[in-house]
Length: 124
Image: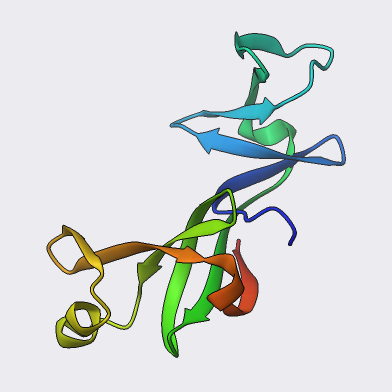
């Protein structure tokens, strides 16, 4: 399976990076050292650029079905996916024995083998 993406991404100088926008600039992240990027943590490098230097800024959400119900995928680890229920029906979430993360927010760890119809949606 390809890497699951969720969050902001920016295209800068023709290359896409995970991003974190703020009021007037965007932080770009990479796992490999690149010219102009500073080490933030081991294996994580960051560069701050103004919005007008970006080719594109967008938000990515990965959706799927699990147990025939709609979810977004928040992350992955060792053959499991962290999923959040998007069906909006508490009785369904309770029937699926999902963890109540917050009011109206239900999440779970799902085996990747049980996930169907994975699709990425990009919002400009």
